[in-house]
Image 1 (spheres, helix red, strand yellow):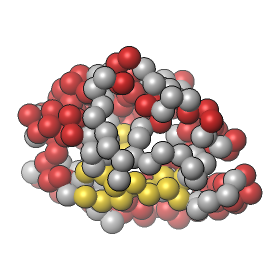
Image 2 (cartoon, rainbow, N blue to C red):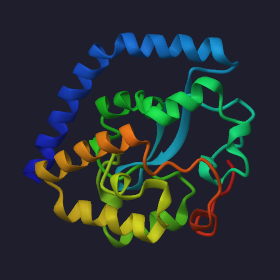
Image 3 (tube, rainbow, N blue to C red):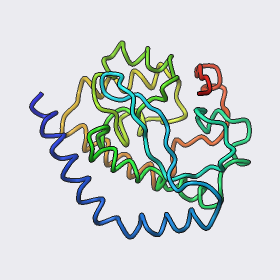
Length: 207
């Protein structure tokens, strides 16, 4: 419990600094998105937060405005049809996730923690209940993300998230942070299309 309070203070401090330091990057990406395709700069999506509360996660828009809603990209039949030109760069570098620093600043997320599930990823939410994963703030990156991300099944993902909850500490968070940097550089674990592993295990409905 003591570390969780320290963790929140660190999130506030680091997110505040990040919003200021990265403001030129935000501006450049905003201009790039606006010139590249029609639609809003930000993409909002309903997700599951701490104690299974709802919140709207923020991302830079990487898809065209006619993309099916509430469907993970790796479940689309042909995601290349929907991803914008600048979107491909943003997704490959994970720069599309930067607006979530604001979600962190206002307390909806943490820098490190289980990635927030879509509101209708019922199988994943149920599996996470087993390991008390839904009791903590979701994160920008986490243990499951550096150990497979889109390549692993729902049960495996929930189990990894459960390991994080059980071992949560500054050391564990640092390990997740460093592992994320390595994965981003290698573009590891990102699946931009329907796979056998994910196709049969996501039960999604459109809003």
